[in-house]
Picture 1 (spheres, rainbow, N blue to C red):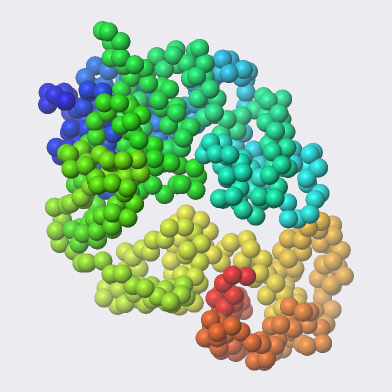
Picture 2: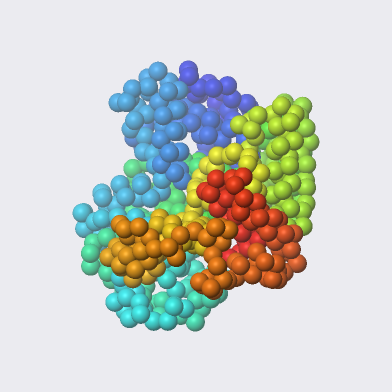
Length: 554
């Protein structure tokens, strides 16, 4: 199946036996099932380096990834792995590497004529695509309809979902956008007009890049495109969608006497398939040996990232998921291939790092309790000598951290958020904060500017007129716009929102049971804010944080 004498490259890292097997495999197609932390990137880089060292033409190697950064990193490591490939003009620089979309763009510049594309077509980014969808939506007479009609961004999302999943529009609406199901015929009209507009203006969106690539492969010149590559490698194969799977099969040239066909090597982990909401289909990975007959499967199970106690938990979860989801028993063969469509690839992660604390599973009755427990754990760790910079909290998506951010802010625990704005820096939260600042201080000019500027149809000229009427222009404000001595607006001139706040402060407002505890804390915090113990800005921040805790869904 592979020869131990095949070169990997003098700069290649030490590889374990399973990684070496994947690197040296040359007989047909290959699926590398790489468990979490098992060195898949190192293995993929070593395989490309090995192919080049073994005489493969770098210009006939195609490496497909899901981010430009991943492609750049891998090709950089290939270049650094061998002295002969370290130059910017060395063999590694000739490898085709990039995302599916970027490679599609390059190939369509060469073969797009077969699909009726002009050579100078333009690619729209997501923002431009949404803008074009909005324009078409308006031109078709849907822009001025009731607000219940889907927004342009939602319409664009539905269109993309239909294209990438290759599902019927009615099915997509039923499963993913049930609130839009009544607009089926209207959406068909908009999509047809959108397609016509793209063709008229010689533009493609990201989804078109994949569609046209697949279309060219099905045309008479498709064989010529597939002829360009001897080796195609794909990273994160569990996250490919149906179109990408079709493309990969279309790029595969069959064996002919005297010349081997295209060799496909896919790397992935079906247990890490999390992009179904983007139309990714883990079934592509489960069906790999069916789509590419004769393919071998190599499983990487040695973990380099975690300790044994952590892996014991991970393996238990994987085993439970497999028993719950598999329609049949997993094969006991060495390659552990699924026995039926929908089955998982069996794997048992292990490591030489046997020491380490056992993971703790803590359950809480609501998000607020969870956030308080995490904050407690952070402070307890700090008391044990663990610096805050050495602690991290991970969550699956940004909104899952909102409650925790508020709790950390409430306790004055400094933190840095990676991957987005802090909750209190988000635009909609700052809008709410501006309203609260006006209630606290009607002369807050900056807060008025933010609130007025967020209103539809209100521009700079209108804002200036309103500010002048309020006496907050260039001249001094009138007496009735100055902050009240007690730090709260009077009942006489309090608007409805302010009246609600007044009733809350006076203890007249009622709250659901879930907010009862926070409402008491909020009243105490507001009482503190009326004193001189905190700067005004800190008072507002603290009050807003408590408000967000009390009303997490508003």
